[in-house]
Image: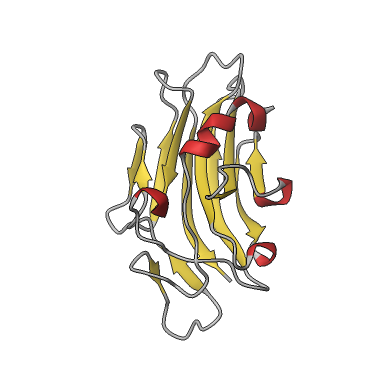
Length: 175
């Protein structure tokens, strides 16, 4: 499965989160006390990723030269911290995953403990192999006082011969 196949990617690519809007990567809309928007301002990306000019969305496009493409924010390597977990809060995001019928690809999101490099738990992961647009969330409540990271990734699974998949990620928020 994807988790074991890309375990080394998880260690290498992390994103720090903070529920109190810890730095220039968040944008609190007027009148929204319970929701913190996260922009891609302080995210780094692989070849095959396009960040919108307003940093509000990222498009990950499958690249035939690499098995995966990712967008990350990793304070461990100098990226500005954007948020941290809080009780009763979740990380929400919208995605639109497009692929051909014969594509063997997966869109995944991982929360990672930045001190150990390992996945926090299966409940801190989101994977989808079916094309479609939806909203997804990962509960942050269990990770209060824990340094965490997150990785958005589009990956080719074993046996994938096509290279036409893409995923648009937008509306990242803590609520």
